[in-house]
Image 1 (tube, rainbow, N blue to C red):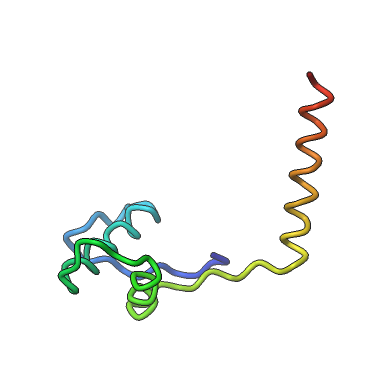
Image 2 (cartoon, helix red, strand yellow):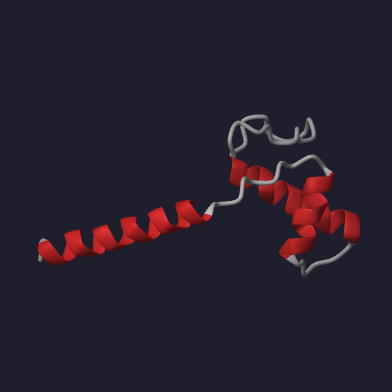
Length: 82
């Protein structure tokens, strides 16, 4: 997240919560605020952004290409070690 701060959770929630726990808390809060049991994660994401949750930095084409080269290199390493 490039040093972005996560939104502060309510005092009743653990201040040492992991990112996943904070996200789960926002999902619960979204359900409480909207009354919906089934949720669309795009809608939850919009809700979280309105609450101050930082948007992640999008990957560049070069980042994606580097991941593809990494994956290909791992496949070759696995094939050679068998």
